[in-house]
Amino acid sequence: MAPTVVRDGPFRLFFFSREEPRIHVHVAHPDGEAKFWLSPIVHLATSTGLSPKQITEAQVVVQAHHKEIQDAWQHHFGG
Figure 1 (cartoon, rainbow, N blue to C red):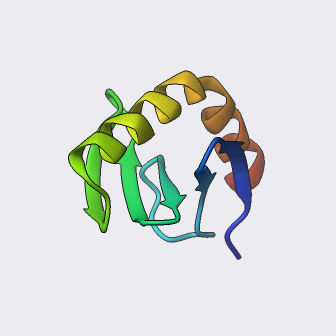
Figure 2: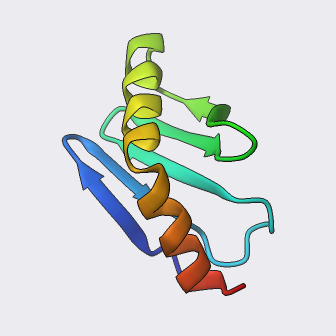
């Protein structure tokens, strides 16, 4: 299961259920995908198919929705 948290422009932010306990979010784009850690700061974990500009844009989207992502994580995974 991969619940969508946010759609923002060409980006879809989502989680994979119980992939790993560290808070993170996946970002899908028509050209590729990235994974961002949310703590202690938002930073890129991995990416495939995205240009450096698209990665920067994705990170801006993740930062803009940081609270919403954290709240959705807590709701979905608990605690």
